[in-house]
Length: 99
Figure 1 (tube, rainbow, N blue to C red):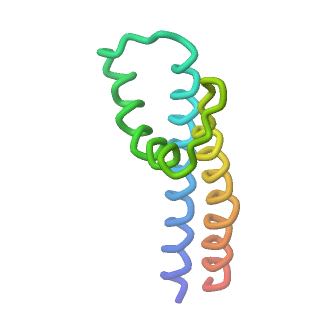
Figure 2 (cartoon, rainbow, N blue to C red):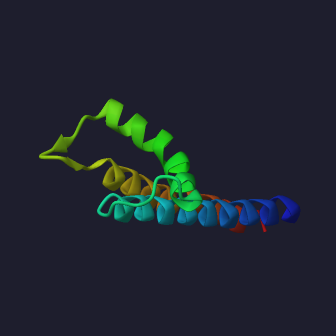
């Protein structure tokens, strides 16, 4: 059973890193919205292409743009924090129980 424990531990770590990376992308997207970046820059295009599907779903589901301020990155940010705290820690505890 220890193999499953190590598998779940590795899965939790990888999921934690992916969520952290996506959190940084959402943060960079929010910072880019304050300035006027070059839309043809490959880094800007990557950030927009990765973050827009998630942000669009939040904007479509919960239209909360008051006075030109978009709150969807905050909702996504809070969702990522919840997933990191709940899901990753639950998988880590499961892995410790299997070891």
